[in-house]
Each structure stands twice: as structure tokens, then as C-alpha cells.
Image (cartoon, rainbow, N blue to C red):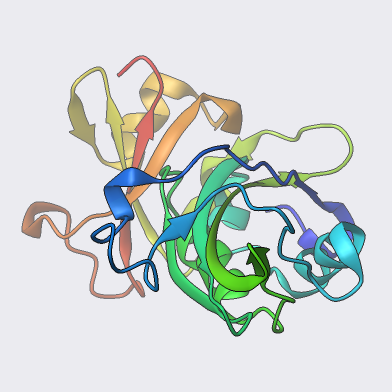
Length: 209
């Protein structure tokens, strides 16, 4: 298992699309609920973009299951900055699993108030899309099956179109595997693979499955 205190590294990039999000606009007569993705004066986090980066890096916690698996990847989160600078409609729009989406959404939701966006002299609602990358600094380490067995969680592997127990998966993957070969990690409640001695059971979907 990788120690996130030693190897945790966060990469985030702020991207903004341009134009009005028509699918989320209300009627032309009522502009109070319209959501913009480009405005004359963009919303501003306290301390600017660098302040936002620092806030995320300080408050984001590597999910325990993702840490056990050595899972790395990117979660894209969309959110709306309201007229009062608060966060709304925080939604992960890509799936990595193992608690990464909920953690990214949690940190965004608890953000300090922003200075709201301004359009034609009035505060407006603005949508942002932020990719947040979960990763470990330094050389990548393999994920060992023995560490998965010792953890508080149970794991079932989805390989080549079928689920396998960790013992069966070990005969196919070996005693360790590259975590980069994980496609996603999902909650799994199949009674066939129930593990009452574990906190929860997860389905580890391998790439090219």
C-alpha cells in the first residue's frame, strides 16, 4: 500500500468553455437563473487561481480504497458559482471510482465564497469545469495482492468480461499488477462475493476487459 503522506501529488487544471449553456438556460424573459460559461468579468477565488490550487491541494484527501489499490486518474467536476459566490450543482462528470468522485465533489462544495462573475454590471451564475488528477509522486509501485487481502476492503476483479475472486485473479494477473491497468473501481454487492468481515466490497474493472 502506498503512503499518501509521502507520495501524494495533486495536479489540477482550470478550464472554462465559452458561450452560454443553452440547455441550462431558462426562458428568454427570465435571465435570473441563466448559467453562463463566459462572462465579462470572471468569478474569482480568494487569492486567484493559485489560491484555488492551494485550497484543493490542502483539503483534498486521497480516498482509502484508491490508496490501497494505487489507483491514479482524473476526475472532471462541473460546478456553478452562484451570484453570491457560493457553490451549486457540483457534479462529477467522469468516473474513476474508489471514492475519488465524491472526494473531489466534497472539496469543491466546501470551497470558500468566490467573487461572483459579472455580466453587464450584474452578478450572474457561471459554470466551471475542473479536471482534478489523483496521483502519487515518484516512481509508480505495483499493487500487491497480499496487501489487498490485508486491507479492510474486499475486492473482486472484472477481467475479460467476467468477475473473479482475488484468488482467481492472482492466477491470471500474478502476485502484483500495474495499477495503471485499472479502468475503474465500483461498489459491488453481488451476494456470491459477499464478504461480511470487510467494510465494503469493490469491483476492480481492468482495462481491455
